[in-house]
Image (cartoon, rainbow, N blue to C red; front, side, top):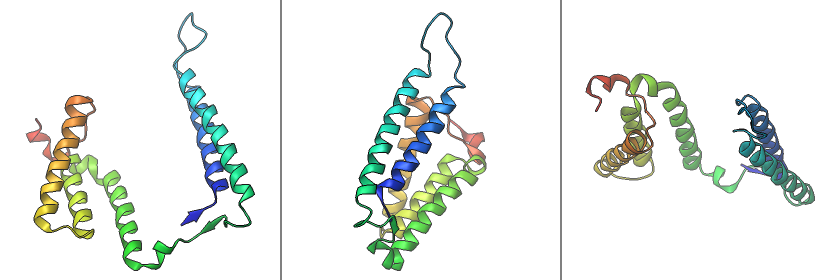
Amino acid sequence: MRFNDAIFGIVLIVFALAEIGYTSSFPRLHGQDYGPDLFPVILGIGLIICGIILIAKGWGERTTVPMAGVGDWAQDRSNVVNVIILLGSIVFYILASNWLGFILTSLLILTILLIRLGTKWLTSLIIAFATTFIIHSLFAKVLLVPLPWGILLPVAW
């Protein structure tokens, strides 16, 4: 789909207002005029300004660019199936990653996506294993962000 810039401008402003509103829940630092909410508020104000610019640009182009339309890619059934599989894999990750674990969920999703996009089985498995291992190692060891182990918890390293 193709959207006019005004649509994205409105979405950006709504997101920025929600982000600024959420930062009001951040704790205040005693004895300081600013706290941890300062930087997100500055970013939110910048996003609002960008949203206004997008709305102005989209409003000026409304006669040549429709507010929403389907792009040429949507005419090919294969492309539509690829988008549906991609969105489905995101939903699957959200629903299954706590139970199945990051490693198995990632292996399954990456393998299916790579095979769907034309990669051979063995190559898909090798790339999926390597990518999953790198992502897991980066998050768990470098960034210290725990990823769910799921059913692999007994063999967690």
